[in-house]
Length: 280
Ligand SMILES: *[C@@H]1O[C@H](CO)[C@@H](O)[C@H](O)[C@H]1NC(C)=O
Ligand SMILES: *[C@@H]1O[C@H](CO)[C@@H](O)[C@H](O)[C@H]1NC(C)=O
Image (cartoon, rainbow, N blue to C red; front, top):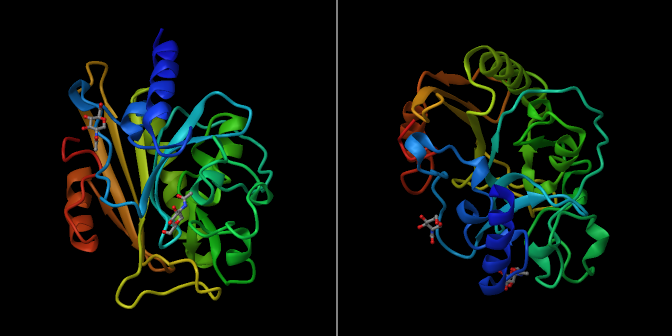
């Protein structure tokens, strides 16, 4: 029943939206299942206003399920955040085949992630990063929704979209950040209910001064962050927390509540920012 209702909603939203399918006007309607719902209220992270920010319900080609949600900054060509439900980790194969979001460049394309070749050269990459922006740039394609937090091959594959990645210092990606991803899996497995753990991972773009990868097209974030919210069976907040680090190999900062992280993020973003509506 739930799925049928969702499918109907997708069609309704599509018929009024600018683009078709996956880039949507309101992702808390189209793919609400990736956002925590403390006390029964679906509470997505704050969305910055303006056409620069695009809401994506992430879906692979030829699949009918959404895997996670991303708010994408099409000017800086990096995500603001990816939101997902943590339902346990199962080992899977890293295929390292990268996709992007055709609809960001050409609204007649879509409605799912696809290879870059699906968009004409003239439009390709106008509103998003390309693999070539990262090649020999000195930066990793840092996953926001990490492979390590997925529990199926299809879900793992879907994290390899450039709209889910931002330039990350290799020493950080493979060091402290990787450790945080491992620690978080351990914590969520031990403390949270299987279907009540919500995670949001985001980045803060560099602004003063803005720093770009060598191609000049993709912003190098100053910070990477991560927040989680676990609910009990009555949807009451049970545990929350977060992590924030500068984009280098220095040790990051952990937070005992998501609200504490939200306060710090509010000073890093141009406007106050809530990951879980301040409710977790
Ligand atoms: C998006 O949809 C939700 C749920 O229907 C609604 O509460 C919210 O106001 C909508 N947001 C915008 C910006 O229209
Ligand atoms: C891409 O960005 C340009 C410039 O901001 C905009 O005019 C265009 O509509 C965007 N393309 C799509 C498909 O949204």
